[in-house]
Amino acid sequence: MNAAANAGEILAVSNLTRIFGGLTAVRDVTMTVQAGEVVGLIGPNGAGKTTLFNMLGGSLPPSSGSIRFAGTDCTGAPSHVMGQRGVSRTFQITSLFPSLTALDNVRSAAYRTTRAGWGAAILRSPAYRREEAELRRKALEILAFCDLDHRADTLADAMSYGEQRRLEIAIALAAEPRLLLLDEPAAGMNPEEGQRLVEMIRRIRARGVTVLLVEHHMRVVASVCDRLVVLDHGVKIAEGPPAKVLNDPEVIRVYLGREPVDA
Amino acid sequence: MNTNSHGQSLGQPLAIAGGVAALAVLPFLAGNAYLEHLLVLWMLYALLALSLNIVIGYLGELTFGHAAFVGVGAYTSAILSTQLGLPPLLGLPLAGLVAAGFGLVIGYAALRVVGPQFAILTLGFGAILFTITNHWVDLTRGPMGITDIPPMAIGPLAFDSARPTYYLVLALVLATAYLCHALVSSRTGRAFLAVRENAPLAASLGINVFHTKLMGFVAATAIAGIGGAIYAHYIRVITPDIMGVHNVAALIIVVIIGGRGTILGPILGALVYIGLLESLRVAGPLRMVIFAALLTGTVVFLPGGLISLWQRWRNAHKSENNLPATPTGLPSTEGGAK
Image (tube, rainbow over all chains, first blue to last red; front, side, top):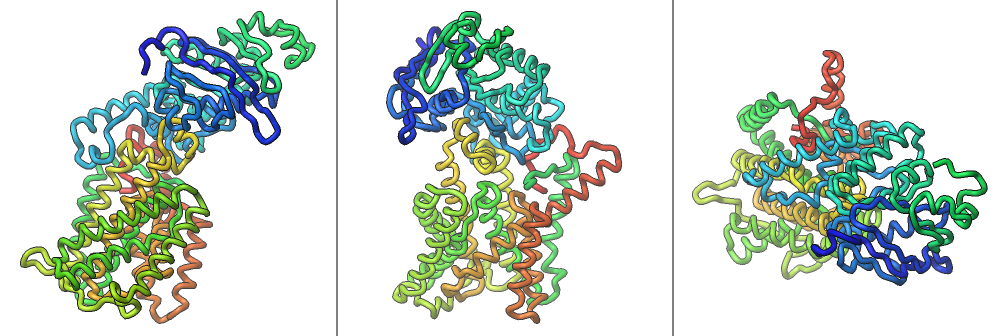
């Protein structure tokens, strides 16, 4: 990892484009994310937000343009390489390890931060025992962080929707990411759950994790983001602090309609 | 499918010790050579099913090629001992290595795809290995098979009858069970489960899905090869039928009926399979129909296999006593149904 990237920008996207057949889902998007920031990516349905996310997470190669993460060129790097470099993500549709317990979901997700493999487990080496104890402690800490410590032994698919969404964040955090991509974390949440999510994102930032989130709940976006990037038809149409962006006439026209912004 | 099971923190070592002791005295209770022979077959199938379970249970991929790797191991050791005069004891690890080599090449090609396509590819590779074995008469003697294979021996100790062979295979089954237990309590095994449960999510967490699957596949084929070699030196005769479709089906039935993704499941499934196979001998070819019905019934009504009955019973028992259904403080991937 590039030490210089610790301060300053962690993610730099230049002229990123993705074409599906004749459709340009993302066109020439250039944006940066500074370390420690919480940046919101907003735009109407079909604006290309998830496509952009998929390219950042490595699950979709860009058609052109480049992605730099922590000072390293990551254009076209596959998903597991982005994961190893410290980019974790959640998915728009609930995505976890359904038939494992919450604790094992988090322990499986800590792959990147653990070293002792099968051989060490066979030999029960001291390093393995130490790491297992440490992993268990850390997994329980992350579950507690996501308010799921009382559910550690519950199977993921037996959890409520709200718990599953929090478990997804716990999974992403277990990889100790430097950049966390959250794809519509507040989808389907009621206002109270949304408020809890806002607090959780603030605490995630306090852990030193940079956050980039796609979100439709304006209340969530406006209260947690330092900066917003607005996409429409794959093109970046605005960027800046929420108060400014959400009052931008162009943004209001394409996205928010005529209703006043309640932020 | 619920593939995890919680062990009792205090009862578990005792239960394992008791189980191993029971398995150790079984041949003395059997009383006759026929039952001892069935015990050997049980352990052999348990060993092969444990290896197949790594692919089906932990990686979540169905393979129809497993019997082919059993055959590769059996033929490797049989050919080395009959034609080159190599001691069978040396043939055992070599059988594992050669089967793993085949597993590496075939897995490298077939694991590019997943799900049904992978299953079909393994069926194809299995058929190719079967056909080659059947027709390369110079090396394998084709459909005539290889006869007069010498028995396994460690120094003066010859495994030329059922009882000593039983202990040899039992030791290998216990070793493999321990390997599987260590696997699922390690970073590697948790990556296996993550890949099974949700490959895109696993990849986003830094897990190389292809390499993980390849590693599991090769480990499974290595154990299958060793099991095949033991079979060859025990039965003393092998034909290409060992790679045949009925053997593929048998191993899959054992894993699914017993309980995939657990350690006790395949061992239990092998017992049920061998037991029914012998007790239904009067039914002749109808046996396979009965097994097919059992397999279907298990998949529909008991996706976790027979072992999940025990888990259900225990959970119900616990709630009766107002205890938590799942004990807290016990890592669930550890212990896998012990």
